[in-house]
Image (cartoon, rainbow, N blue to C red; front, side, top):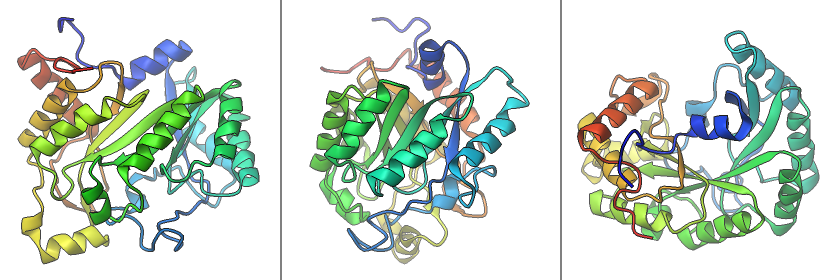
Length: 309
């Protein structure tokens, strides 16, 4: 393979090929909690986590799922009347409830006119076999993507950030889900404490062994009120927050090592300014993406250039 015009597999293009039209995810709050908050696995959640950082203005958890979908669709349909939509259950752990309650919420979402599928954000330790069987059946009726928060391939890091599961648990969940013919996504945070460049490059190679459909990356962000923010204030030397230049170089190095079949959905996260401590690069996500693309062209590189299968 030579680079040509190919830089990486873009999520928008993937959806366009799959559905033949522009597709937008609508964030849904199903009113779930997390085993890392209710005492089952722990309390307080992951040390970096604050769900306010990724809840859009149109998302209101007190509303029924179908109404949240319709509100989100109305938000986007003004600009793109022909667009289709995916229901994105994002906040907390969206497989952490009884099977009956989960099915009711999922089915309510996909029944909304214009919805062509569902994306379910969850933890690797919250995918029981019974639910997986239902999702396999559901995937025969509509598009289903299960997105696992993996965050790191290092057990040492996972302990430090209070994830409540190890990497082997993530590998097992991804493989079981893919074996059912369900599309699988993963979420990774770059720059967690103790993870330098060499660790991250090994991580890219390790993730590339998994049967993933999609992958999300984003930079570590310190959010006000989180336990990690307190840790940073107490011991800033434990953290190596990316400069913009270093992050772009790291992402390009990382993408070079990734399985070229992975669809890359995101390279960064943008938190509200009033919540963000650091790093603040003063860029919108799409501006950062353009800088990453530009750097890939400058380096004449592309996704999977040095991938070893």
